[in-house]
Length: 479
Image 1 (cartoon, rainbow, N blue to C red):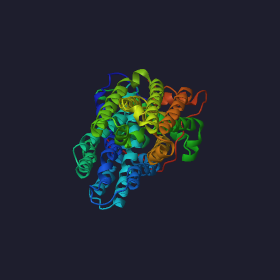
Image 2: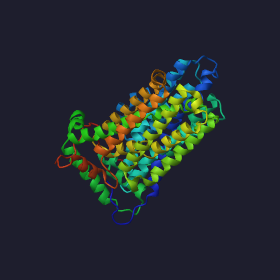
Image 3: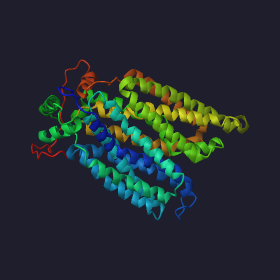
Image 4: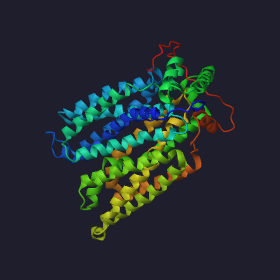
C-alpha cells in the first residue's frame, strides 16, 4: 500500500525491521522442533521422573493448545497497544515458559510450561506477519512476509542441531535465552506506520516511515494514503461483529481459513513433531539425529528460495506446485510404510524412499504452503479488522495443529502408517483444487488494491471497528 514517489526509498531498513520482528518466529520454531530431540530422552528418564509416551504426547501438544488459546485475545491487544509493544511484552511469558520447562519437577510442570510457551509462540504467529505486512512496500512485501516461515524453519533446524549434542536441560536453557535476545534487538525497531496513523499519531508515523524508507524519502504520498484510508474507515465505523460479517471480510476469512486448514492437514506438524520416529520406523540405517538435521537444512534452504521468488512467481503458483508435489511425496511415503507393515522383507532395499519423499515434502512445503498462508493472512484483511480476523485464522491453524499432532499416533495405529500418509495426500490434493478455484493472486498489489480485488464489482468501503482507545495525542515518538 506504499508508493515510491520522489527520492527512491531504501529497502535495507525494512529488511532489518522484518528480520527483527520475526525473531519471535525463530523462538517459535524451537518450540515446534523441541519435541523431536527431547522425546526419547524424557521417556528414558533423563529428568528424573517418569514420562510415559501418552504423557509426552500431551507435552508436545500442550504448546498448540496455548497458541490456540491466545490468538483471539492477542488480536484485540494488537489494536489497543500496537504491534511493537505487544511483541515486546511476549518476551515475559516466553522466558517464564522456558524457566518452568528447564527446572520442571514433574510432568504437570512440563504441561504448564509448554502451554505458556505456546501462548507466546501463537501470539507471534498473529503479530509478526501483520507487522511485516504493514511496514513493507508492495514490491517486497511478499519477500518480507516470507521471513516469518524462514525464521520458523531456522528455529527448528537450530533445535535439531543443538539437540544432537546437548541434553534436554542444556538444550532448553539455550532456547530460553533466545526471547531475551529478540527483545534486546526489537526494542530499537519502529512501530507500524499503519497503527500509528490509526491512533492519530501522525508525527510518530512520519518518523516511522522515514526510519523504514530513509530520511530523504518523500513520506507525504504514503502518509496521505494512510490517513485517507483511516478517515474512510472511521466514517464507516461499526462493531466487530458487523465488520466481520461484511462480504469482503467473509471472503478473505474463508480464503485464509482454507489455507490454514490445508497447511495443517497436509500433515506437516506430524512430520516435524515426530520426524525422529519416522526415520526410526523407516529403518534406514542412517543416524536419526543426522537425518532430522539434514531435513532441517533442506527446509531452511527451500524457505529461503521461496523468499527470493514469491514476489516474482506469485502466491498461487507456489501454492499449487507445493500442494501437488507434497501429495505425490506423501503417496510415496504411504507406499513404503504400507509395504513395510505387510511384508517387511519387501522394503529391505528401499530405505532411501521415505527419507527422499520426506525431504521432497519438506522442501515443497517450505516453498509454498509453509510461508504463503501466513503471508496472505497479513495481506487479505482490511486494517480495521485485521487484528481480529487474523487472530481467527491463527486460532484455526493452532487448533488444527493440535488435532494433527495429538491424533497422528492414534491414526497410525488405527489405519496403519501407509494409509495415514495416503489420507494426508488426498487432503493435500483437495488443497490444490481450493487454491486453483478460490485463492486470488496478490503479487505486486497494494493492500488497498487487494481489498478492491476481493470486493469484485461491489462498491463497499472500508469499515472501522469501534475502538474507544483511539487517541489524538501524539508525543512524537516512534513507539
